[in-house]
Length: 92
Image 1 (cartoon, rainbow, N blue to C red):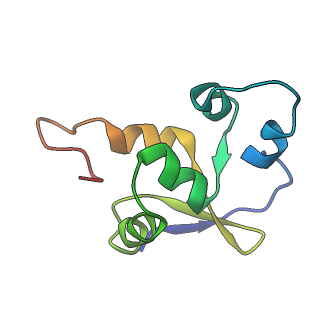
Image 2: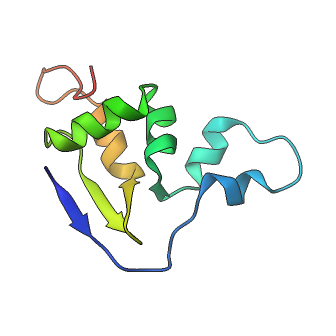
């Protein structure tokens, strides 16, 4: 399992972005996020939360512990979407 413990108050959540008035497309919402919760990561990857947790447990997806909660960097999720050297993406 690849868990990293990080301390910091630099978290932005989708709920904070969603509170802004007006209609926000989901892609625009994710563009503003650096850190994502397991639910946000699952939505971004279009998989279940359980599948995200399994990928972390298998070491296929890096995760970080922030305030005793799992968090994911959007850049790590983007990397998991790209095929690696002709192989399929990690989440498939």
